[in-house]
Amino acid sequence: MYDIPILMLHTINNSPEKNPLGVLSVSSKGFEAYLKVFKKMEYQMISMDDLINKRYDESKPYIVLTFDDGYKDNLTVALPILKKYNAKGTIFLNPAYTSDKTDDASDWGFMTWDEIQTANDSGVFDLQAHTMTHEFIFTSDKVVDYYTANKFAKYYWLAWMLWPDSPRSWNSNAMNYRDKIPTGYPIFEYNRRLSAVKFIPSSEYVEFLIENYISGKSETKLFDGKRGVYETKEDYLAYATWEVTECKRLLEEKLEKDIHTLCFPGGGYTDEILDIAKTCGYKCYMNASRLRVGNNNNHVGDLHAGKFVGLNRTSFSLIHPGLLPDSLFDYWVAKLSLGSYQKQPFYVFVKKMLATFLH
Image (tube, rainbow, N blue to C red; front, side, top):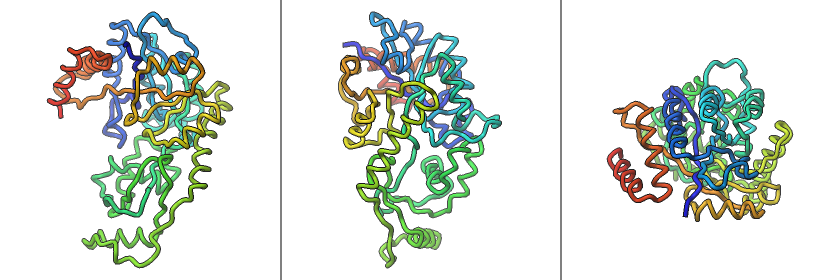
């Protein structure tokens, strides 16, 4: 059965090296190559709002374009390309991370409220919920690693944890946090904010571990003080309710539109969180990639029948070998990925061989 691809994108940016999240980028030429493939294969390129309200031709194939996090380059780089191909898309926003800078020339960073309103008024972008924040949390007192500057791309979120206001100025200067995070800062077991209760290490334990790391020790059992505290289940659920419900309330108030779709950062959620989302009025959510189930064709049918459903998303990213220009490489990545997504044997085989070669 024909499936309905919902494509997951983040930033459309030509300078990925300027941000620790650059690994999520597709270049402007690469993104345009994607849209060329979709147009050539006669896919309608629609948003989640189009999907919910059936603003598409059901007799023809379609693809839903989604962008996570609300980066400035969605507006400055992606928007003109989407207009060129008569395409639409949905941006999932974290309202607590809206930028406080209106004069930053960098495409990196999160949009301001004025920029979000511009995106909302564009006739191209549909804005939906990504919860209030994009936090990571520690989930136990077990140390799994220690921070060093060369690990910043992996642990960039420590900056958000240590300086809670930093996402609001997360521009091309974000790399400066690489050297601000203390060397040896302990990395406890971690996950996304809504996935579990939070462990809050004591400052004394953190300082002890940093000193141990710098002195070449790694023994945690020598510490005889309080390692930290765990958030209560009640506090966890209260916070999760705020993340999910306040995001919807605030976006509806600011944008004067229906916020019907929820995308959880990193696919971090539990059944309890889904119950909260359903209760506060969301119509659907994005399944975590690890929990991908069924066929979107069936899920969309259930959605239109009034059921609260999870939808599957896909990503077309492959490691770029640098041997070909983005316009050519990403054209074939999109073509192969779309064909394999629809389980066409030739495309499945070729993409598998290409992925094996590039890894």
